[in-house]
Image (cartoon, rainbow, N blue to C red; front, side, top):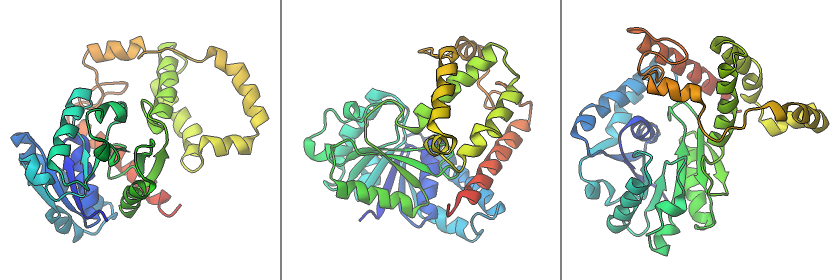
Length: 313
């Protein structure tokens, strides 16, 4: 049974993952090599918990309890020595993750399950140098950002582990309010990101060809496909609409849809100009001055409203 959890990396995803487990009463060791990040991470977690309390998603009395469940560590060995489950949230670089997994194998107890939060790297490559006994306890556990608001958790089941081990991790995620997806193939992007970026490719193409403004494209998605997909998946929607209708529509449209094999020139040009979105103050929309924090909070409030509406669904 998984009781002691270690999160490796306290950045964007790591501190959020630790926050979720701590909120649900798990003891979490949070390892971070950077002293400056360690110095601010508990303030970030407190900010998340305070936001959730302000929005009546948790009780204010839960904040201190959740924070007390997180122990910061600067030494990886100390953070992992009693861990039942370790999930890494370090940068998306293969060699970094391979090196970390090799290190974790040497310092973790034999029963420890090792998980990567990767969404684009191969588990087989990450664990290539591990002994078979540890490969059988290794998996991908990919959460969406922000981890405390989006319920999905993609869990790999690639044939390297017993069903009983997978079920233990599955149950862990259910216990913290996640909606796990069992991923059967070790493919780049897993399931959710492949669907997301297939859609994004067409969205960015529509901007490039001037089909509509950014605002109207987002409206079309939010109040069209996105509105329906909040409660019904594409496959169920296709069944409801009629597969014959979908087949005809796809025959008519597919020849004109974007099928590029790399990021579009528009996005690359914006990145080269330093227009990275809210973090730089400009992307498809502008976020001048103090509006960046306001925009982020408003974005998270919409996600939280959606989370509340989906609970128990």
